Amino acid sequence: MKREIHLRVNQRDVSLVADDADTLLEVLRDQLKLWSVRESCGVGACGTCTVLLDGKPVSSCLLLAARVSGQTLTTLEGISDGETLHPIQQAFVEERALQCAYCTPGFVLTVKSLLEENPAPSDDDIREYLAGNLCRCAGYGEILRAVHLAQEKLRG
Ligand code: FES
Ligand code: FES
Image 1: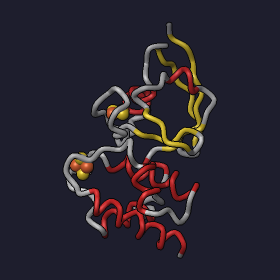
Image 2: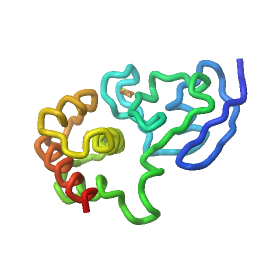
Image 3: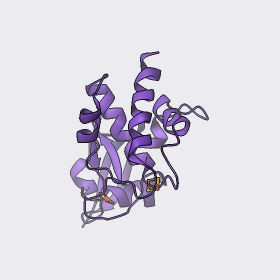
Image 4: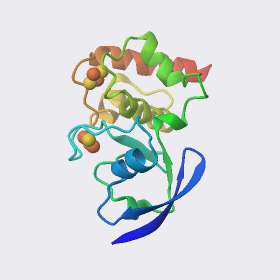
């Protein structure tokens, strides 16, 4: 069955019609053309499709769009300031914490949530928080360093 759903996405109110079976991932990509939201495993095991739902990371491949109607979402497109990268994105670039970058939007959004919860996480805190995000080609050491650099940048 199709129904109208209402979302606040990247500080913008949107209304759209989705099938009850449509995942949030499908709606964000196919209808809203938010290409940073990417599918990999499709079963909630890799974190590639992560978006922020009311500020917390969720796997958009697992959520039905109709279930989150009325809620607030953030994708990678919503955190940069035009051409200016968000400090977390900048830290990933400076620490070379990406290669193909397919996983990077999910990592950056998860790190954003982590640093809002805990502005000075230890290495173990970071590893635990990022445990659901998998990267198949960049090194986790570089990602760890990028999180620490992002901390410094956000502290100013
Ligand atoms: S594609 Fe959603 S968790 Fe892997
Ligand atoms: S940079 Fe390629 S999968 Fe992470």
